[in-house]
Image 1: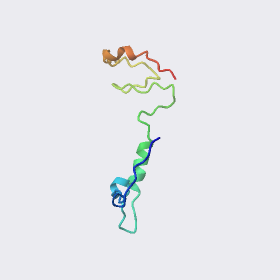
Image 2: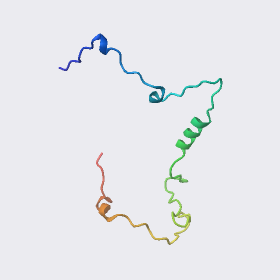
Image 3: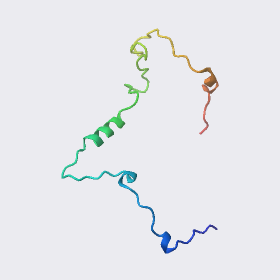
Image 4: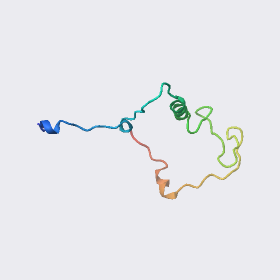
Length: 93
């Protein structure tokens, strides 16, 4: 079994954390601005690559053409061949 070390009275002080370490904001005024926290939450909720639905092909990164409507003819980006063997890698769940 494992035993925890006993604390003496002089070790009982602990560590004092600052407001920054706790993620707190000190307010010294009667009102606070919620603009920045709300803005941050809205930006975090926006998807990185928004698509109209799951089968959406998106837009061409080169010309901006809608890939659902037509094939734009731009070249596919070249991938690093060192990782080509991982293309068909499947993770067993």
